Length: 248
Image 1: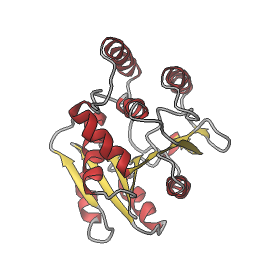
Image 2 (image 1 turned 90 degrees about the horizontal axis):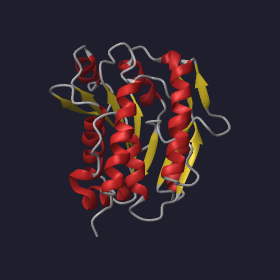
Image 3 (image 1 turned 30 degrees about the vertical axis):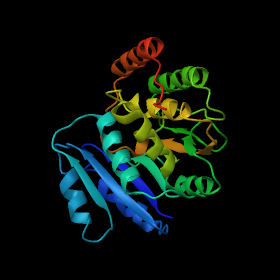
C-alpha cells in the first residue's frame, strides 16, 4: 500500500524547500511525494529539482500558470493513474500553512476503510492561527453553504485543500466523469471534487483536525474572494441546469 502526497505549488520559493524537507523528515513509510508546480515564475521549480537529489519525489510542471484547478487535475489524475486499488492519495498546499501532524491520522482513517478524509478546521482540535478576519468570515460562510448543498456527512470543511482519498475512488471518478470531473477554473475545484465524488455512490467520509497557520505562509495569497464567489455562482447555475452526474 502506497500513499501519494500531491503537493500543490505556485511561486513558493520562500518555503517549498523547508516544507518538502519537513515531509521527508516525518519518516512515513511508503510515502511518494508528487509536487505539481503550476508554472511558477520564481525559483520554485529549480528548488524542487535540486531537492530531488536528496529527497525522493516526483515533479510535474506546467510550462505556464494554468490555475489551481489545472494543478488539481494534473496531480490527482497522475496519482490515480499510477496507483493500485488500496493506495491512498492526499493533497496539500505547498506553502506550509497546514500542520503535517494530520498526515498520520488521515492515512490511518483511510486505512480503516473511509473513502474520503478531510482535514478540518471545524472539529475539536482544528482551527485558525493568524487568519485575516474577512477571509475567515468568507470561509465559514462558504462551508455552511456547501454543507447545505452537498450534505456529505460528517464533513464540515469543504474548502481546505488538505484531504485524503482512496485511490480507487479517484480512479472511478476519472473513468465515469472523464474530462468533466474538474470543470471549475479556480479554488472552487477543491469543492467541486468533493461534490462530484459524493454523487458517485454513498461514501464513507471522516474529518480530522487541522490547524491552518496563516502566519506560516511565506508567499502571498493567490485566492481572490470575488473571483471565487463568481465560481460558486457559475457552479450553482450550471448544476441547476445540467446536474453533474457520472456516466453509468
